[in-house]
Each structure stands twice: as structure tokens, then as C-alpha cells.
Amino acid sequence: MAKKADKDTLLVAVDFSPYSEQALCFAGRLAEKLKAQLLVLHVIHDPAEAPGFYAQKGKKKKFLKSMEDAAQEMMEAFLLKMRQAYPDQVSFKKAKPLLVVGTPVTRIVEVAEKKQVKMIIIGSHGRTGLAHLLVGSKVQRVVQLSPVPVTVVKKSPGNANFCNPV
Image 1 (cartoon, one colour):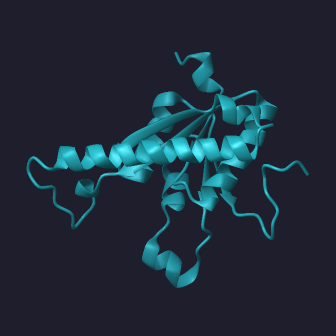
Image 2: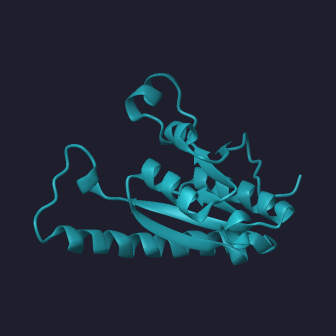
Image 3: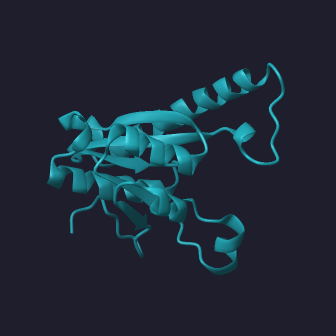
């Protein structure tokens, strides 16, 4: 049986981009309305797990460690920036960061299942056409594989921001 805290958690997958900022803003407002906890997830993409990449014996752990250190610093800077920019967002102050290593789609879905979150919230570049075909859509795969609802947040038009009350 899941703990109550897990059931009242919204998972926000971030890559530290402006799209992630919008997703976190949306999630923060939703979390306050639902009285839910934010779990801010960043997946450190292990290149050894991607086709075409090969890990060198003995160097993979050092390489991953430096990637994890950099990701930790980026997560701290990202959350600090958001907390300073939106000091009234109580959910940002209580947000729990989580870094995991692996392939993004797989790990996002695994964390959602393990933590038994209510919802996944993820930002999207909104690519279409050839760009979508060439780059692919991690967001689309998360939506297809997720055991819970997924909210896809696109960057709002103009200077609008989900963190600012309407």
C-alpha cells in the first residue's frame, strides 16, 4: 500500500529549459490547489544506454559521476532561480528534487510507478513535421507508456507565464 504522501505527489520532469520552467510553474499552481507535493525529476541520460555509444571500461563510473555532479548543480540552480523568481509559490519551497540515471522516457515512467504519483507534468517544445520526425518525441512516449495521467505544458504565447496569477 502506498504512503499518502506518494499519492499526493505530482511528478514534474525537467531538463532545465524554459519549457521546464513553464511546466514547473503549471505544476506549482496545480499542487497548491490540490495540496500536493512536487517531485522535480531530472534524468541524467546515460550515453552508454543509447544506441551508438560505447562505455570505456573503468571510465564510465567517473564520467557518470561528473555528469551527476553537473546535473546536481544544475538542479540546485534551476530550483533556486524558480524560488527567487516566484517567492510566493509555496509549492516551490517544498519541492523535492530527484536525479536519476538512465534513458529519460523509461526512467520518468519508472519513477512515476515507484512513487505512485497522481500525475506527470512535462514541458514540450511542441515540434511538428520534419523536426518532430527527426528528433522524436520523448513527451509522446511518456504519454503512451505512463500508468498515470500526463499533462503536457507548452510554452505559453507571448509573455504569459503560468506562475503569474491570471
